[in-house]
Length: 116
Image (cartoon, rainbow, N blue to C red; front, side, top):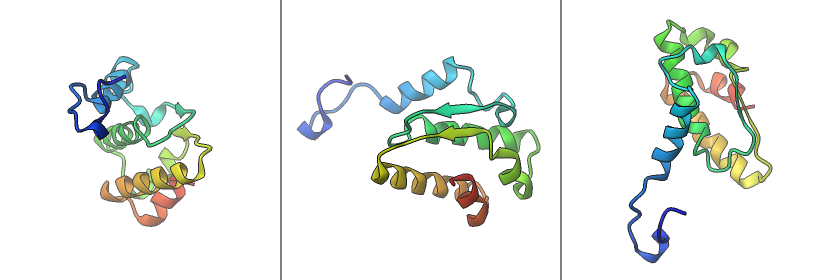
């Protein structure tokens, strides 16, 4: 799909994450919009290729529009719904999402709440 496998030592000429970002752009899910007032459904989040950039855009939009750290958990809890059936994949991607939320100045407690 993206050229030869990177495991074969080849360099991919396409950036898969750039493709995911482009799809988010085309769908109108961009941080210059009030994303915290919208809903985003990720029906099979896998390694988080859509989920993590979408969460970053959501946080950027929320804080850009004056959102406060203290109200983030309550105001963002319904903004993204994501599903993953594979337990190990779920756990790993949830860990990455928690880290992203904490790096974005949310408390660990709020990050855990948003990831539950």
